[in-house]
Length: 260
Image (cartoon, rainbow, N blue to C red; front, side, top):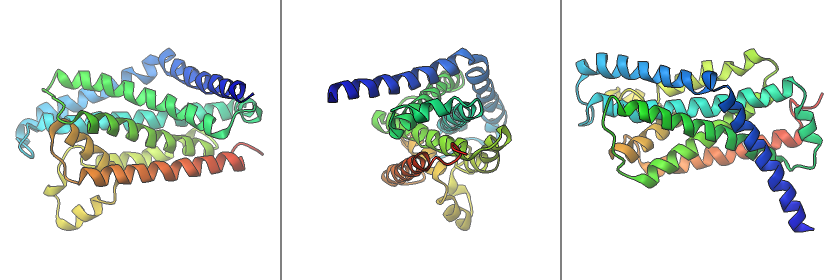
């Protein structure tokens, strides 16, 4: 009996994941191509044109220095956007109700969407990394830190996208958080600079930005340099993941945004 239930749960979970992956692969021209073009422009403008005037940063060529940040920026943006748009579309088209009333635990519904968003974030990360290799040489210094950081960051922002989709009542509200919260945090998260260049007050304020820890831990994995302690980055990201997971499951249990 227990084996049968586990099999049913596995079928439900894998179905959600496969549907999510097929969705963003089917519309690859909207999901995979734009980030590659945008990040290529970042490398050309900030790396080649502006970077040649800036020179080295933390002992690295500027193009190599910003590459980890640009890769991480593309991962978190796409992991977030995938879950936010997909789950809200399910609400908008009213087929989320079939999933909610099905004998599928809430944690499997959440896990299915998060894995789908994480898959898109990681695939975009691979694409942008390939683009980056046309502009600079990258060699991984710490494989464990690099791989675990990209996966944890994608999971964290996929959870954020899920919560955004639960609260959203229109497609316009899907774009509010990325525009007014995610984008500023990303650009102020040390993607294009080291916080050691900032005045002391702004350095301390920057430490409140979770994206700073993701970018720097990932940069440490690739280049071996970071503005923040790597252990602290992992602790902060795991705490955020635990908090957002609990909150997302709480929203599903209450039926917030799902039941009229």
